[in-house]
Image (tube, rainbow, N blue to C red; front, side, top):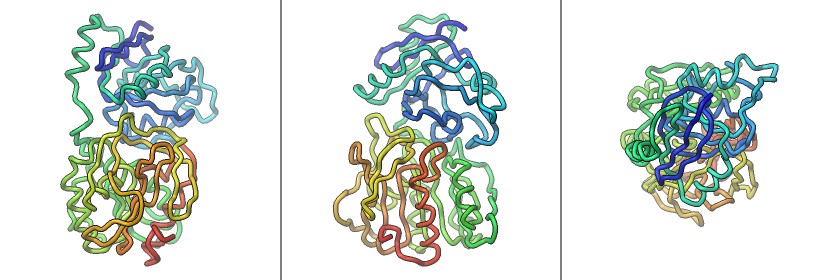
Length: 374
């Protein structure tokens, strides 16, 4: 164990101890407020090219296991904790957290004041960061390297995390529907929850054509979560517009929600420090119920919160809003079977308040009323 430095592009530096792999790593500095679920966070492709700061002080006590992985690897660029657990004490653990970080070459830092880092990001906004572990560099050299690293705005990253070829998750029990899921950075929990509802899920690469989608005669199309700037996803936005004209039921989450919003003609914008963690309050305007939700997004859709709005596909409305800051968290068309939410209804890890959204998708595929009227 040696010295490590957490260096922000505004010149702020926090000194700690090396943890995980030695070396240097760069990304967008984001904080997560979850007290658990670090394995799901690490393996969520939406965190690609991000350095995650855990606000909960004690991380690692439950270890790592194969079952809780959300994808094939750890995607974060770096991992920042205050007090890593010196032991693993959970009966499901197969290895330690640090073992996985070292094996997969993830540079981390420990023994830093993660609450102070979080307060700094809340005050100054999201920014680039570098972690430097056991390297002989001056502070000036580290800051210069961080400032030369790429920004998240304008980054097209879904092609780096999407599946290379189509695969199928079969329905559990009787097959009721076939869904084409566009993998923009999908988590394993999502097709699993759909399969539990009798849905056979065909997961396609992010550059799938409409002809390839229609070959399976889908009852619905799912737009997954993923990393990067939604303004770069011109081809996928065009694909969604084609699907909307065919009136195929569509359900989008997170990055998929942002792409759906852009397909409706709205702009997306970068949030000051984003929403991340498993305790974000969201109100479903169609029921006036508040649900605690899991978030991981740094961009949002700019749409009118009150009343309805007009699109080339008919009228629509904002169905969900974040109670912390009023950010748009859900959209739905009133004249076509399509809706989206900004957060994770599969909530792995996290609360299960939003699981009903998969049932709304099922209702759309049954030919029921639009999600916004439920």
